[in-house]
Length: 238
Image (spheres, rainbow, N blue to C red):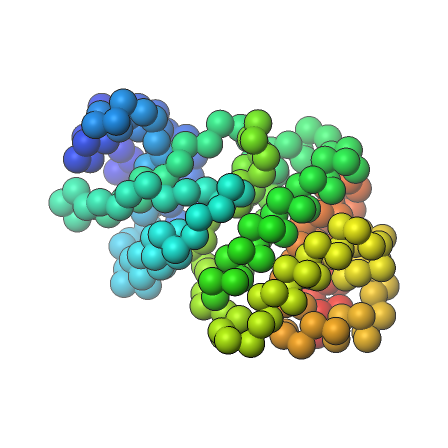
C-alpha cells in the first residue's frame, strides 16, 4: 500500500506523495528532529520486494552515501520501519527535465549550462568508481540552483576508473566537449564523430557515457526523437 499522509517512519512524518518511478515511490516528509522537509523514497508498493529489488535499493543507498556533489541529489539518512526500508534524501524544489521538455525545448545557453553541470556530476561519480547507467531526462531535476542528478539504483562500479587515471581523462573529455564542437558530446558532431576522436578515450565506459550524455542533450534543443538519438549514439560508441 502507498503511504498515507501522517504515517510516521521513525522521526519522519509523511506529508504528501511526490511521484513514483519504475522502482520507488517518493514522498515529501517532515523531519521532526531538525524541523525540515525531506524526500522519502521507498520500494514501489505495487512491486514484490524480491532480493534483486532489495539489492538494487540498497546499492543506491551505498552509492549515494559515497557521493557529495552540488549536482547530485544528496542522501541524508536510511532507515527501516518494520519490513519497510526507506531512503531519506534531499528534497528538491523544481521539475524534471522530462517535464520541462514536454513544454518546449531549452535555449542553447541553458543546454550548455545543463551539460556542464551533469558532466561534472558524472565525472565526479566516475572518479569514485561509479557509473550511473540510467541517464535520462526523468532522472534530472531542474532547480533554482542548477541541475540535480537522481536515481543511482542501476549504478555499478566502474572497473576502468580504478587506478588507471581514466576518470581524469573522462572529466577532461567532458569539459572539452563544451568548449570545442568537434568533441564527441557536441550536439553538432553527435552523429558524425570521426572514429579516431572517439578512440582518444581508451575506456569503453567513457565512450558509452559520452554517447549517453549526447543523447540526453540533443533533444533538449531539437524535436528529434530521443530514442532515435540513443540508438545512433550506441552505434557510434561501439
